[in-house]
Image (cartoon, helix red, strand yellow):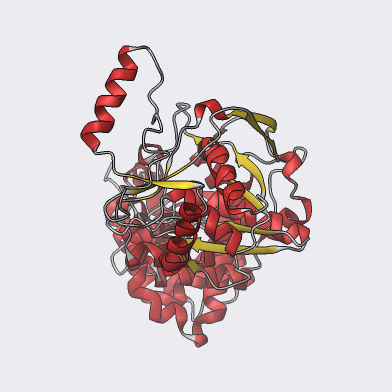
Length: 496
């Protein structure tokens, strides 16, 4: 039988990191086994469901590269089918209407607690046939004894004792199905063969199997993923950092890197850390998923992103950077905090027309390549690129204090004159030779000339090689702009 798996998020919030991981594991399992990966939008909570959240889920999965094999199923579109199945169970005597009020149920609960019993519905309406359907819930008749044994694909054999499962509600007072019933009905409708989901839903398994049995359907297999915790061992939440997947596009992460990090939250293949999507699909196995909670480490995620940045061919990295800038205004709304982190990229949005111009493409790729080794996010590429565009250079005070000392005045002044004498800075070898010659005349090592020049034209102590930096900057600020920056740096050198 062909493998069919699904991700079934509720559109009550943006695509969460935990939901994305569940979707990824389902996707990888389907691709590894040659099966189908499906999506269901469980929008039965009409008050909290919003169209923008549905779009976020669809866009987020597409951005991550988790392509669907069939159009997404919107759960609310199957409401009439759900109602027909519910009516069938009542007519067959496998479920019944219950008109107990909330006051009555609360009194029952309090009385059971006083008797030191676990609160449960006592089945008082189980055999009544005079209760009207309108305004009543529907409860499933459960055995009340025995056990269900499930061979969980991750946790192994699990026994569920049915004495702990009372006659639970499968339809609300307005006739709409509860979560448990809708999930079963739709999983059967979509032909799901494996339910791979978070272990917080493990307690749902016996109830859902009882619904399958009542409807006369064969249950799918089940496997439950360990939860994601923060470093404090608590369930992942906003306080641990961004939890909405689109926020990571704003923060400059690459989709393969996010998937790589998410798959390592609970799954392993030896000691390997860096995986392309192709390798993840090739190596993925449910047998390699651990049982313990995975710990979310944002620093490791950033490190992995840097590794993927360095794996990308330069043209693809340039495209990824430009796409990051194109979507940034809409993506920044997903950031719960720390919008200042992406300020370098926000500042680069004004330069998009220059970056997208085909005539400038060779220059853009050269610029991106020069930062590829030392950038862990696309925002860092933006930050490194700023001095190549800024009309007014912003000097790092620490760089000024460290480099622009009185000893830098003579070499900077000499460099200014050398720059003024050149027609072009596009020949990197000639530029390097010129700086070496100038250093020899001043009886200084090349670094004593190059570093003050670097701080003068970038405001920082780091940049690509100085001849590359000069060549690239000539295209955006011009030779006169470079000379003006050197003049500004000379003004910053203290008189001693």
